[in-house]
Image (cartoon, rainbow, N blue to C red):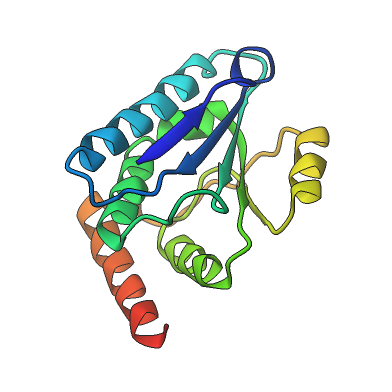
Amino acid sequence: MLIINKDCFAQDKILKVHCGNNWAADDSMLMLKCGLDSIKECLEDCIDSEKKMVLVCDCTKGTFPPIARAMQVVTFMHGIKPIIKKSLEHTVIYVKSEQIRKWLDSILKVYKPVRPIHIVKNKSEIKDHLMNIQHVEMDEDDEEQQTDEELAEDLSEELESLEMVG
């Protein structure tokens, strides 16, 4: 499940997210959907705002989701790219584990973000990103947009190859 912390959202438009520990629970699908819907709602709140949202994902808390759940997150984000493009400043992903870093690298080979993503290794780097927020425009991608099915297939292949290595 995703755990959403909106403590800094109202004033600073910073949304903090981390994973829970029980991805096998019966309600984990529902909890994941609720977490993703909450992220989408916050993004929608920022569409017409002068201040865009910063998403901080803390991968040092909880457990990284299983492949099927990670694919759901990526597919969801792929589906809301127009909203992300209009309302997200950038994403900061806090990662210490080398294995999770490899998983993220594999996911980012398939999922092409429309806003910058910064992967950091310590809290001081997070602070630096939050203190130096600048509006950054992403170049338009001339590549053909992938369908959700193509994205899921590419991601599945990439993660399967990573599992064989790791």
